[in-house]
Image 1 (cartoon, protein in one colour):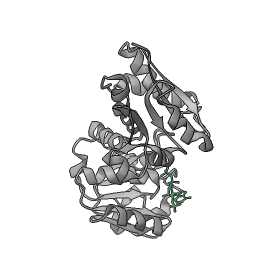
Image 2 (cartoon, rainbow, N blue to C red):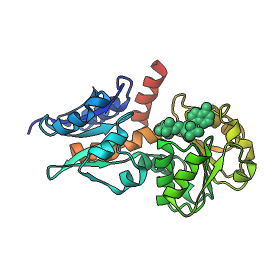
Image 3 (tube, rainbow, N blue to C red):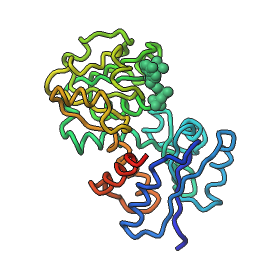
Image 4 (cartoon, rainbow, N blue to C red):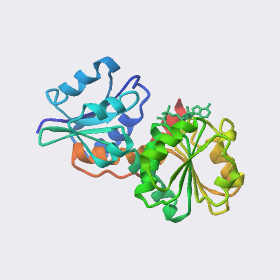
Length: 277
Ligand code: ATR
């Protein structure tokens, strides 16, 4: 059988850690396959999608800024991609190009690994209303969280997400007070900011109850200011690296036919890479 080929595409793409993750699994499982980073400019993305099959790819990952173009450009989409409005994983099924989104899966799997029972911990407060926030809210809804509070600097964007996700999802502006945190079981930061930039976003973990879990989808640095403050307060914290590792699992399984494991060894490899840069 010919070598099985997959890729990650973005613009820029040089700093993506996905080739390290998939490369580790390919060698660990002895699979004759490759996973390469391909830089594609936005104006070339449609043509890139069209040539995938001819170029012999099983599929690949899509990252910034192509996730919305991939959403529009695939023939079929899975439920998560439709809910999130973006595609991060491509594969062929019976010759048809499919697009899926595994970011919400990765978010939930990371918490399952490091904070089992997290989905039964109470209301969730989500900081931010961008693309990453959509994936997180999708995962929270799928896991049955009935009270999701979006806090965003631009209230209109939070409201738009509230309408999109419907019952149980409320929208709040940056001025929202501590009452949102007082009974929360989970605080999620989806913005690129540390706690300092987020002080106006009710992100101070001091306002959370003692059983609350705090997680950040930002993983550089591994311990963000928000996570450091939560840990200092004695709260359970989960860093964002596991989301990156877990979101890669479903794609690898589709392209290479084996469900890979997220192990401490893989985590160490990626942590070393983060620390080296
Ligand atoms: P992503 O896809 O990573 O979620 P995005 O769609 O650009 O990126 O969303 C960025 C999020 O970070 C938004 O919630 C944004 O708030 P606005 O909707 O008000 O722009 C938030 N954000 C970015 N810079 C911010 C800042 N300086 N203060 C507060 N929030 C900020």
